[in-house]
Length: 155
Image 1: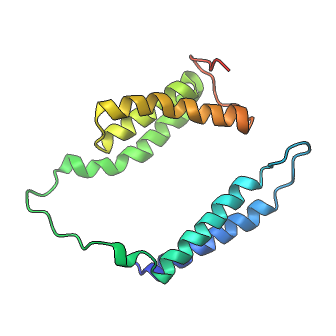
Image 2: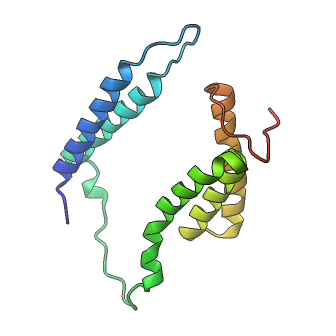
Image 3: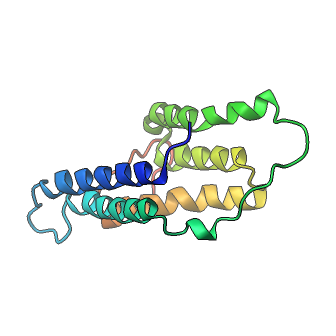
């Protein structure tokens, strides 16, 4: 199924507008400059902007037409990679409490990177640094606790 860029862009504009509208209705938190409405509104406005650019066709002239690659068709195992993201999501939902965010996040990032074809030299540092930086952002900036599990963060 192939959708027009105008339909896809229009859907993103509507989705972004809904996110910004409903996000703006969140109540402010006393004593904080940035409240719970900020994140949905930023995402909503970003979706509106990107959807509008897609709908009017900005960037279409930069695309290079793809030539079909000669070679054997992808194996049946390669087509199962579509199941990796939902499987990782289920794994994280089940493992984040007992293992903690840092360990479960590192496993998810590592497996996602490997499934996308990353080399170990890139995947391992990304799996170590990614969850640590996300945990720092949630703990220090947003003050949202994440599951500690087996490995508590030093901060």
